[in-house]
Image (cartoon, rainbow, N blue to C red; front, side, top):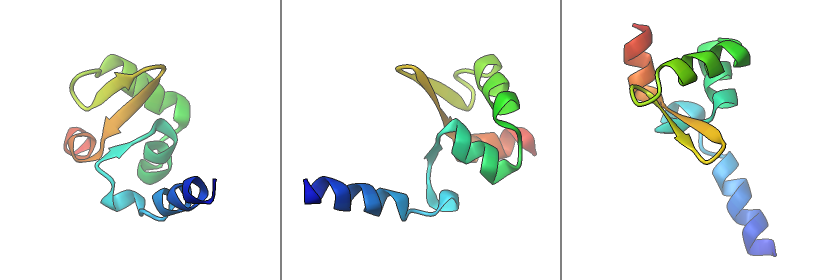
Length: 69
């Protein structure tokens, strides 16, 4: 049980600018965009910078940066 807690703590320690894939909440806070608008961007640009993984979206940070520029 302690190994799982330590692993989860280590995952939380990775800074967002160093992550390749972000969740909607992480991307919204990193790019200063609302969660609803970020979800809409993901839904309309699936395959370009976002992928659907189960019931959540993952966002490729470098591709979204290029898209926003």
